[in-house]
Image (cartoon, rainbow over all chains, first blue to last red; front, top):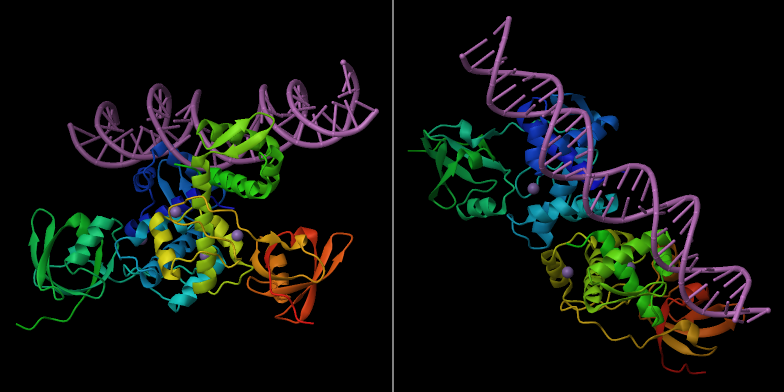
Length: 225
Length: 225
DNA sequence: TTTGAGATTTAGGGCCATCTAACCCTAAAT
DNA sequence: ATTTAGGGTTAGATGGCCCTAAATCTCAAA
Ligand SMILES: [Mn+2]
Ligand SMILES: [Mn+2]
Ligand SMILES: [Mn+2]
Ligand SMILES: [Mn+2]
């Protein structure tokens, strides 16, 4: 059996891999999980021994197929829980992450199935992130781009808000940045900040790149002048 | 913070204390939690140091008030979860225990409150066991007696079926032994077995004392001849 | 091509929860 | 008052996850 700590490492590696295409470095995992790098090194030893990661010493790791399957399992649990908590237990969008992050390791497959049934086999979580299917086949890369890749005047539709910080999410919700909302990019500042107007709130929000990077969008319809 | 293992020890001691009035022995805890007695001894050291149990070496432990509060917290989580799983996720009476036994250590106080709300602040779980109140005041001893204390001809109403084994619970449900059901004691065998007729199923069930001991009942109305 | 800053691994240690083997205490029976 | 069986505790070890300090490697800049 896999410990919840190991599950967290595999999930972290999976999520870092979604962002970079490169091998995942010890330091990136250490940062993500808030542990020191020697701790990561020794865990990577174990994960390699167990066949969950491919490793090149000093050059980082990638998940094996088995490692990816475990990660997808955990991510599926996480996102189903987030969806269930918002839909059936009246949790707020911004609050669900922490609860799901603990419970994801402790629910049975039976529980997972019942939650998925109660939700009608959903495919995205409340943040717009895709929920891996029950067969745990690796999903395709989403084709949405980060909002930081657009320019002044572009109109986009928010697909996913992948931040995990409750305060940031509350702020975004308060200013109308949620999956499904249309945004017009009104300004791209030279110091890494983007300003957009939400069609919902008819109000503009400014976001530093660190936050904006987590807002994935698709190009929307042109706005009439 | 208390580990989930410590919570399990305190819950086990609490539940053993409900049955005996005497100090709880190392071996009883070891049996309950399926660990060896030296393991229990060393955990009792820690629990004593932390002020959760009163200990007399070689003579067993009792919970302190703090220890009892922790135990009640865990039991409240457990029973609320059992109730929620049966009411809202379509779990069967017999199946909930294992799931609740894991999750009880990992839900937040917020989750607890939301589940209690969704259920309308219930006071008993699906097995008829009392759910400790949110303030965690020690509940009174229930006044129900074990069905083994009755005699042939007595009519009783089932209040609580405190077994934890899924197969035993399924069997009991199949034969109409559930909270709220009326039973007539039809035979008390000399070798520790009791036979009762369920008014629901109009069928009789025979139960060894080991099982019957967990069926708590109140005296019911007399049956007309 | 060399070198040094920065990242990674190794070394060594701590705490937790568990085990087995060995020793010791209690309480009941003589 | 002794004995002894049964059970409790101590001793010592393991595996898991984490840490700091020291050694080692990598890669980009000079
Ligand atoms: Mn999340
Ligand atoms: Mn699963
Ligand atoms: Mn139970
Ligand atoms: Mn609680």
